[in-house]
Amino acid sequence: MTRLTRSLPMVAFAAVLIYLFIPIIATLLYSLATSWNKTILPEGLTLQWFGELFRDTRFIQAFGRSLLLSSAATIAAVVVIVPATFAISLYAPKLERWVQTLAMLTYAVPGVIMAVGLIRAYSGKGFSMIIIVFGAYVIGMLPFMYQGTRNSLRAVQAGSLMEAAELLGASRMQAFIRVIIPNIMPGILVSALLSFSILFGEFVLINILVGGRFETMQLYLYAKLNTSGHIASAITVTYFILMAILSAWIVKLTGRTSKPNKEPSAAVAEAAIPTTKAMMSKEAS
Image (tube, rainbow, N blue to C red):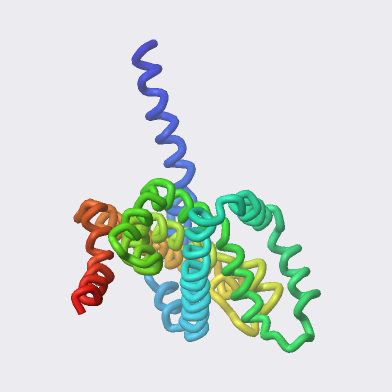
């Protein structure tokens, strides 16, 4: 009985892994299969479908559009949301409840309803729908970027770091850039990765608001589902490999960033050195 109890978690974990990886393995095999109709395994293997995929200029262009739109929206979300979260958490904590409510509303509104509302609000008013989609993407990243940044600020005790830096002569901007940002960088990177992966695979908004006028990777995949299942599988495998490489890179980068190369007090003192030197020069003169 004890042995069975000990092995139960491992069995459950193995069952979850099998459940998750069987569709991935089947998709990979189908993307490499010459034909797969009446047999358990593919009748033959080939790289023909990947060759056709990467020779298709539509795919290259769609991939580039998805990469550009997702990267730009993620960078904009980091630039806007991280400083705003920092300011609210430290200097306006009473607003946190309202910001959390706004963040939860993003989950509550389905993509179809959001798309219809955006069309009603901005259609025919001279706004490019690409800009509207971009803005919707940035707002849609609020829950992920806000929660990740907020938790990181609390973990490093940002208030104490700011007070120490200001006592040593650093301005708020210097303390934020040279002390706070390096300490919360792992949380920012993880939140940005999550945001990018969600945006890269987004389909509803871009399909309803823009459609074929700005074909992204997901729209290209949807079009190929009706023509060739092998190429659609190759697209899915390519997307999975891209996300795996990006995830591994971010995990490695996060591990390097989170290593305690410097003590927090040393980082605070280093941030304050330029200001302190300037004050000493002023007093000496």
